[in-house]
Amino acid sequence: MAIAMEPDNPIFYKDLKFSPMGFGPLLADAAQTKKELGPFVEVMQGNAISFWNKSTVSQNQGIGDAVSRLGNCQRFLMQNMIGGGLERCIYYLAPNAPCYSEKLDQFYVCSAADYVNALEKLSGQKNRPEWFLDRHIVAFLSVRDKSVIEPYLPDLASSEKYRQRQGLLKMLAAIQIREKIGALPGLTQWVSGMLDSLIDRYHDREKRKAIRNQLEKIKTQGNLEKIAMLFDSFEEVQKDIRSYSEMRQQYQMLKKEYFMLEQELNTNKNFGIGAGKHAAALVSGAISAIVVTIYLLYVMIRGGGGSVF
Image 1 (cartoon, rainbow, N blue to C red):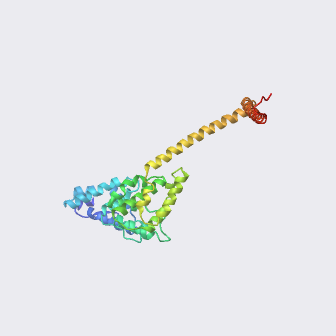
Image 2 (cartoon, rainbow, N blue to C red):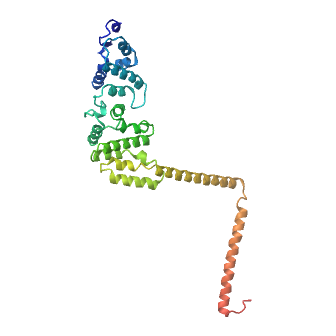
Image 3 (tube, rainbow, N blue to C red):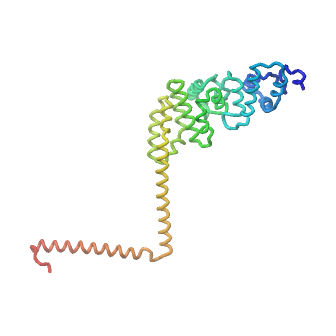
């Protein structure tokens, strides 16, 4: 009703008062100060902004773009995977907002390089976070610098720990390389302590040992790319899987043969007797032949080659 009566006035919704162009900064401020964000979600899911846009007399490019971006946020809100949701809307609608992750409370992170440098500083703290990412960080990077995170999102969103670790390692290495960031010894040691699930993917004990030894040598060098390369050989992984599969097949065959023999021994008392007699006869014949040969040689040597009979 208010929009219909005064179409050029700001939009009023609960305690919110805004124009479409100011909605993003207002949302970012609420996120930073940890205010209730429910009303913002309701605005984006509803049709008040669309109705205001149709009713207002004041039309310009800025308003049209703002309304269009708010419309896109309806789609983001339906994305439950990390990188979507309300967090993505915050950074999408407020392009200058820093990352609001609680993990980065001590820092003002406005870029991927800022994020990696913040992790290096966090690495030496006793109260450092258990993991490097959360929904805010992933959404922030997805909006601000999607090229450094988009290729690794399927791994980062996976429920399999080794895939999460591999995705994180590749992402951090990509940022360090592209931004030409120097050595990050604290971060590489921190990351190295979380890679057991990647190492344990290999079934070959010697392979696991070799990787751990290599990791121990390079983890203090601060080079994330070197660490990532230890786990970047698809051929090595496939070779290990094939070898393990072959060994399992051999084991199953031996196991099957063992149970067959055990069953035969339990049900047939004469099982193996014939084979045993045959083997005994062969052994006895061989021993007799050896004894006769030795005796003949002995007689020939003592008798000068005469008859032994």
